[in-house]
Length: 91
Image (cartoon, rainbow, N blue to C red):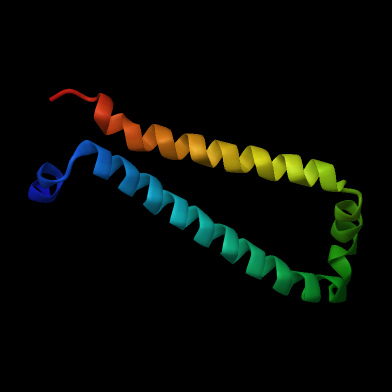
C-alpha cells in the first residue's frame, strides 16, 4: 500500500479520490431512483401509507429542485475536502 501511495503524485491521488467518491455518489443516487420508482408502484396499495403520500403531494417542484442542488453542492464540497486533507498533512 505504501508503494502505491509513494509511486503516485498527490494530484493523481486527489483526482482519483474525487472520481471514486463521485462515482459512488452516482451509484447511490441511482439506487435511490430505482427504489423510488419501485416504491411508487407499491405505496398506493398500502393503506397505512396513504397519509405519507398525501404529505408528499404538497411538495413544490422548486423546493425539491433546490434541495437536490444543495445536496449535490454539499457532496462536491465533501469530496474536495476529503480528497485534499492528505495534501495538507505534513509528515
